[in-house]
Length: 457
View 1: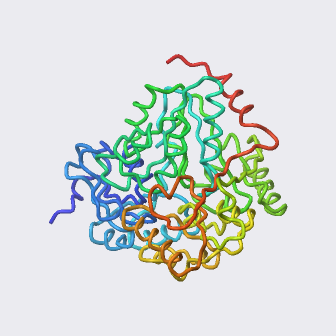
View 2: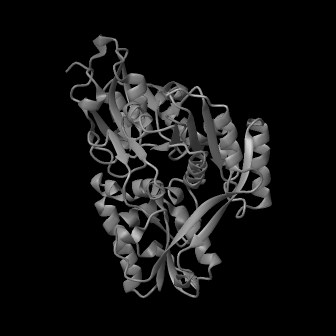
View 3: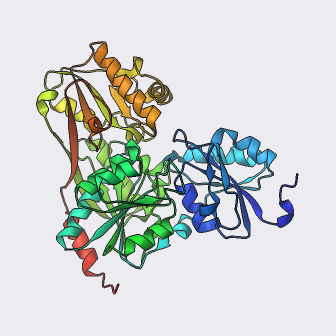
């Protein structure tokens, strides 16, 4: 069987996690007769391998689409399909791990490439404000909500475009628009998607997401005055503009990580504004390390210091109770956090005991905790819900804690009402967290940015 080497097109694998990989293909490879993307690989997210990137999205050069294999198969793919080039295209990975993968790829006979991410940034006809971070869990979502507040005070219509999370039918998810909570059900959104979209919808803000971000931008621009990029993990923006404000959130609870993770360091160096979040939880040592790194790497950035302020719907559900704490999944798994808003709330509002679910986790929850051993002993149950099976296992794990008599109540530290998706048979309460600036307000920064942006639509 011919491998197509005679075509002269560079046989390529794109390593990804159902997000940046598809975007890189769409912007760098679709319609490009110099390259031949033979396969995508998938990691980080369960259930995203074994699919096909459909021909309707891949373009005329790929009428049958492009298969998506698990990253564990990479060596066999390189050797068996005469792969010449491997492009790395996912985020929140240590710099060391990136180079380990590069060394493996080179030893297997292919070149390893980090594409020019600026070349993947699509230019908008409108001003763009992007909110990114150096790690998952720094506080992008609460920062984005604050930016929306300030834009609306200026009587502007921001439309939020969210980093991709296409874990279902890729053709159906090419362009998604969310205006109501019913839209979340209609698009069969996972917990992770709901956590990101629901707070914006509740505030009356339209959200777009999907797979084809050029088409998404074309639609969003029709109803917006400004495009607000809501980043995922620590990826860089998919959009730019002649007028672009890049806000990057950093975390003094993980000082030094801004220089240790890819592509978080890229964001750290590119940011016009750096938001140093969680000042009320950080140590002086952590703050000092972060401040020194900002001064060394991006000394001309505007620095905003802020607290992440926590509130609880019903503190009586926590006080003097034995609680199970559920935290935002990505933050505490590949974000490597050992605490979160739920744990802080449980401690602050006087929980008698925080139950550790490590030994009773069920099914895919057991697999998640086994994979992320740093969570053992923390008392954290990650809100994993990438599909119906994981959602069922999350509910079953909570129920096991109830049935065994380990808990009196549940503290929900995720950005959504988890109890609307699964059954929780004990009292439960939601934790909310909001950004509160200390030294300089986002209002001042946004107003200054907008006052210099004169646009004709």
